[in-house]
Length: 264
Image (tube, rainbow, N blue to C red; front, side, top):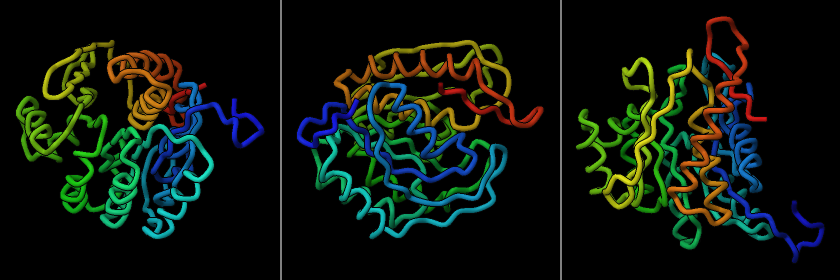
């Protein structure tokens, strides 16, 4: 736990750049809960206020880049930031603001979850514009966690092997390719690459239904473990195991709709 004395803070902190999801299924609440479950503390720089529920995105209003940086700069003054995690950024200005912040703090590890759309299909910014802007963040990331839809969008390649190679050509250090959107009926396969090499391939049974906030939760738990000193491989392994358990007990706000991960 965080000690009362400022000079004796002991819990490693992850600073999250993400949007507010009023349903609590994804975005900042998913970040806070997942990082807490990892054993780290979550600090927040809110990138946008979204209008959504557990099933649908209706719109959003982005935070200005000045306000975003003010939030982040206030936090770093008195919390032991060890890792930064980003999810929804929403605008090219916010991507540029985060890039500027990371270059000012090169010792921070950084988990980039390249959010382009919500699981419900709702837009979280203009995709073509965001894809171009994300290129400045790719070389700064310790780990990038795209699903296969995002991987193809970021690289312009439909072949997953070639798309991953292209991501490394763009300066990536490590990439966790999440296979939940691929047409494998009985299982989901994730592949972890570090410096272009396959480090691990993991499979888990495909659970029934769709899940709201699974990607946010996975990336944030990884960030929490990195903040506490784990290797990328171990952080990913622990996060995948944890996520399968919380999705297995997910709750259904709407019959037949997306389920909400039960992160506690």
